[in-house]
Amino acid sequence: MLTSSKLSRHYALLMVACISPLLVLVADIGLYQSYAQQQSFFPYAVILIGLLVCVFALHRVLLREIVDPAISLVDHVRSGAAGKPSDDRGAAIKSSALWRPWIDMASSIFAENRTALRELADSEQRYRNVVEAQTEYIIRVAPDGRMSFANDAYCRLVGKTREELLNPDWHYFNSFSADFGSFDEIIGRVTPERPVCEVEEAGALSDGRELHIHWTDRGIFDESGKLIEIQSIGRDVAEQKLARQALEASEQRYRSVVELQTEFVVRMSPEGHLSFVNDAYCRACRMTREELLDPSWCELDVLPPDERRRFLDHLARLTPQAPDASMELLNAMPDGARRWLAWNDHGIFDSDGRLVECNPSAAISRIASWPSKPGWKPRSCWPKGRRSFAPSPKACRCRSSSRQSTGPKSCSSTNQRARCSASRSARSEPKRRRPGKISRGETISCGFC
Image: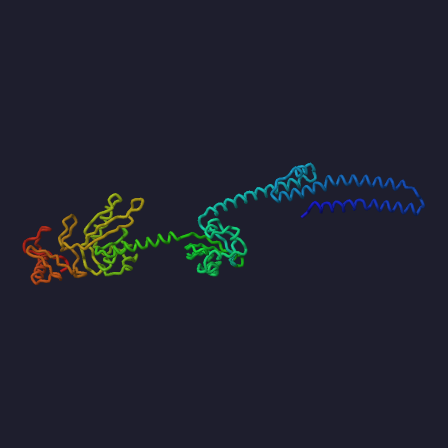
């Protein structure tokens, strides 16, 4: 870099170069007079006086036009590079027309440089404020364990100052207990192909405090793929973990309540796809939960066409203002059996009032009577080949005008089996009767016999 001392040396050399020819001229005159045996000092005096005048004039000209402006320019450039404003001396340089363009150019360059440096400093300060205001722990660690950055949240976590953490003698794992983990594991998580990874670490600080931190690590690599630093962002998830465990325990309790129900509890979309079934429904369908929750399974496929239309109309009547409704539905089980089920449906709607899911619960209807509401179908129109999917251990609900069986098996008595057979024969006859009207001595089958 050009300095004022170098300019002074250059100025001295320039003066020597200007004076040397005059000295040579004086020496030549002296030799000539000595050879001619002349002893006059007048030529020497004139030459010396002229020499002094020339040197003084040259000195003043060079000092005013070259040396002082050059030295001022160097100082101006150095102050501009340091981001300092120009002083009065730098303004005085502009009085020289020779150096004014250079001074103006240097001033404009360093004015732009100062503006850029100021904007960069402001931007850096803004981002630093954002990072320091975070409640997450933000650190940068070299592969050898030395830390190059730590925000205030991390400093508060480990109880150290930033100067202590950024000390070259400090290692990242000095803040944690020996069972917290290995730094080699952290390095092994990130690669140039997969620079970001997430992991949860549980352990204790060196002072014994328990921690559970979720870390997001990002590896920083050079052009050759060598790991330079790891930037980690961590957050304390101890409270979230406790809340998640409490939620899972609560969910397990409620699931146990639902699974112990003898009624069918399901959750279904309007298209018929199931998202939840309890064990009672799985046993009734003789299918596993995985099979019923498979996206290819549609619950509407087990309904006869007429019942399917009734069910879809029933869902269409559910509204956010009246989300609950009940209906009896003839269900065709996957094993081929047909059952009347009494469903209690609860609609679940989104913010726009659209039905997104239905939460039905049902039990097999034990009363084998014809529907007394519009839309009922006579038994002769039901699909044939009905089978009982499980013999009921309870008393048969066949009703007669005289007695009701209480045996452990359905229609265990000979007389009742005969009456059930007679009623089946009577159903095939064209004789019609009013729904729900049972004459004396007549039996209506329960559908399980």
